[in-house]
Image (cartoon, rainbow, N blue to C red; front, top):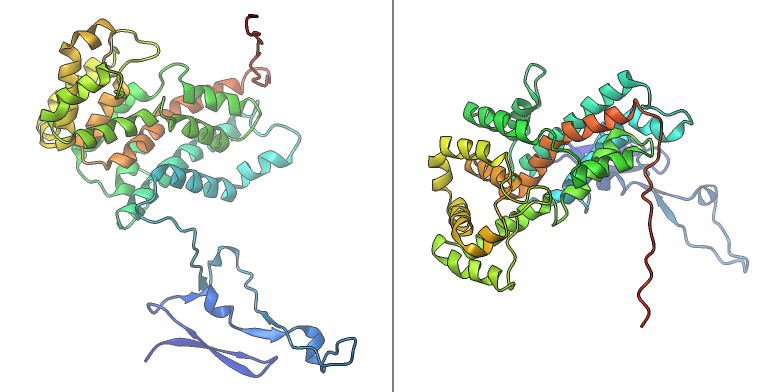
Amino acid sequence: MEESLQVFDTRTGKLYPIPIHNGDYIRAADIGQIAVPEAKYLNGEAKHMNGDTAPQIARPLRILDNGYQHTACMESSITYMRDSDTYPMILAGMSAFAASDSTISATRHQQKPMFHGSLEIADQALLRTVAYIASTIGLIYCHKNDKVFTNPEKDRSLIGNLLLMMGYTDPKIEQCLNKLWILYADHEMTNSTAAVLHAGSTLCDPISAAISGIVSAYGPLHGGAIDLAYEAFKQIGKPEAVPFFIEGVKLKKLRLFGYGHRVYKTRDPRAALIEELMQEHRDAVHANPLLRVAMAIDKAANQDPYFVDRGLKANADLMGCFMYTAMGFDTDMITAITCLSRAPGSLAHWRESLQKPVKLWRPQQIYVSPLAN
């Protein structure tokens, strides 16, 4: 027999059976079936202007329950599917945390700056922002892989709690990421760091500033290049097909993402340290089919004069991602985790700006007219 909650409406005398699903929740939509005619119909029939009886209009019961936390489970058509892109899910998760944080919400409703010159408040908000990013990534990973989310623990590190929330228990992974994240903690004024500071100069909250950095990081010319590089690895399929890909790059028919750097015109100095990590975990690296393709590309790029003469080396951001893959992380989570590894450094720049005079970033534009014919 199906379990149900019997609701008796004293206004109409009707009894409504509300199904109980899985023994522990009811659907908000089922409560919506409880309806009553508009108040003007309750004390007699309503009439049209011509004297005819007007049809009664039933008004469904509305549910006033913040977040449906108490009695009903809300099923929404905008719930992300498990094969959704990680990027928009991060924005949704961070937006939800921003909406539920009272300090963050109050930032836009007071004339006095919330954080500028108030480092104690800023530091607490900064720590929560980093925690929100980590929690969002953990929630997304568990949702996409149908895993049970594990709550973080106070005595664990940031990396330790990230792995705990995602369900990783191998201590070697934490040791590897501890070394890798030192290289990513802060790396001067990257595009995403500039985006954080640009947004932060408006005196917005750190979550909004961090979201600006994440949006920037996912662009194809920044962190998004990682996703494109991995898509190329999948398309190539096997190391034997790499020479054909390399020729396509040289003929400018294909593009090799993750090689070259806007600052380092030769070798990224962080690469040597990442290579040590790769050597330490060489068995895991060579066991992964995608990384075998990546290693074949890197070998060809280091030998081919086309790449050597142009100083096109694999940058440290791409090489570091090889370690995530070797440790077993899903490809579509790598850019997200990279954003988290960079967040403390970017927000440290934001914190530093709070101790300086308020100055809105507004780049100067110089118009250069086209040359006359």
